[in-house]
Image 1 (cartoon, rainbow, N blue to C red):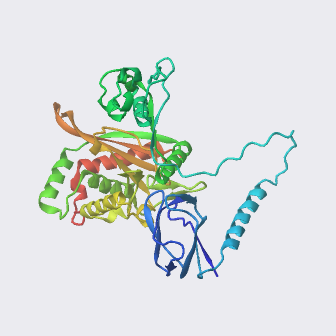
Image 2: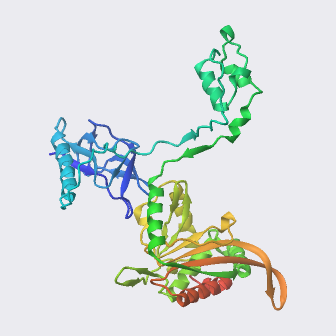
Image 3: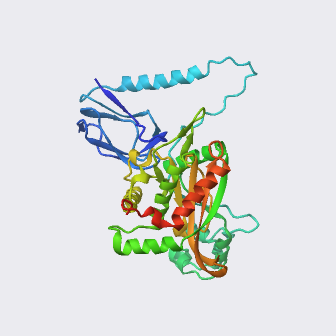
Length: 427
């Protein structure tokens, strides 16, 4: 009567999960709906509840280890139930699938010695510091006197620091060099250590693997082209200050103005709000804007749904909540799925201008730079101005240059005349 619990697919892009924590151990009773584990996906760490009542008989993935979607995560059944047959059947089923792939006829070739079997993939270890071997011509550690007395720890420390043992006087028993001698040594060739090559190997997280795969597919599948405009932000700065001072219940950011302007412009230019589907182009009538948020392991893109129908303060509140949930790894699949357009804003990091890779299935992404005070010409005179540059990355399979330019001109007009966004229902 045992039931197999498999590694769930907790997001549309998830291919592998890592068990961050087990809340039950083998032999514990489990009730349906009870939390049994926390699983790290490519986007968040999510709580996983049991679908069955019973006793936890088998754990298929240890804490900190990963497994592909649909692999055995755990087995729940009656106390004392033997699950060895289930595990054997699973192993045999995997072997059968492997054999089926090998059935295609191939030409016979001379027998070769069998190559050594590769070890099964392992989860990458924690970051480790690696020191490259110093060139023989420039030894970083000298032990030319074989009769030098030195403790193992002191020898290791001297080697790490690139010290010449013949220059160090030992204060231990019988003149033995000990740790304090290494710590107190001021001379020698310790400077050699500065010139040694070092590096740190950091294991690739599930999130970073997914970012690499999805953006690689986007960049090398969708033919990107880029359109840049400069926006006069004087009016936007004045409007934001006035809104935050006397009208809005919540503080409104420039990014909120960008989201609202994009949402409004997308309703007028549905081609930009489209997706390449292979045999068709899907023109979305709803506007769901993904907002790129930086987190420790990479990037998440929570979605402001139906953004064209939301006020600036509603957008502001939602984006703030998303940012907090993203950093706390509390986002759920419904928070990051369904985008029709994406915004990536690096202006707060001092970036003036950049290009972004399209977040599929969108056909466009807007890269937003910072606001810079520069000389501008107004009414025939050179005066100080506040300029923000934005770059629209477009999938040329869906969007042509003229369509992209028309969208940007509408967006620019809204940003330069924010009064158009401040109707009775937009604050």
